[in-house]
Length: 253
Image (cartoon, rainbow, N blue to C red):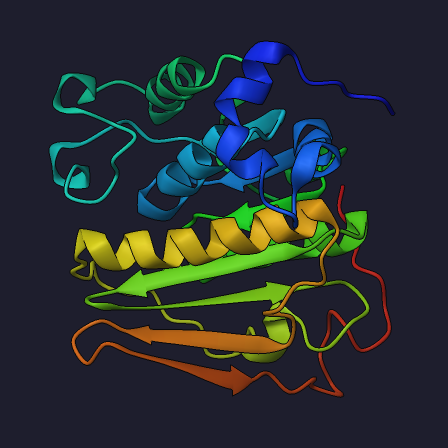
């Protein structure tokens, strides 16, 4: 599908257009893209801003919560004046102001098996900005059903991790985090810049995928250790007994 750039867009994205890895055709691919960003906390809000600024043409942003004072050390899409407002409303206003060429679908809902299929439908990838493994599993299964990549991210303290799961290739999220033994977790501390590192890695991975490049984090879990300034990688091995990727296609209603 043809997706031309206006002169104003060419000026806006000039520093991307001169990159040989992007150019005008690549920028048109980014403009044609649709991305589901699940959760508008630290990771989701920062990734949404990066992708909107990069020129992604369509963002579906999903969250059910309202902005709270304690969010503001890391959720830079929201401001003090937004406390008490829906995160989707706050984010949509900021993202539209940031890039009016980016169409924002703001969905205020709890993500579950009943609605996730409609959210993921028509998207090119799913970017994880949630804070619990149960919701991540729902999103991951929906991404597999749609045949699109799922970019996982998580942060705690000064540390974080990121991985990309592509249907039919390498391991899946549930190979890494089997459902057995899930436990509710207490609130954990987090420093904003660590969130920024992981959101940036997720966003770079997303842009590369939208440009047609192979996801570098496929089958790998990247660990960022902020205090020691170390980055490591772990190979995620497929689990032959995995209930999601060992043979059966997941069902999403």
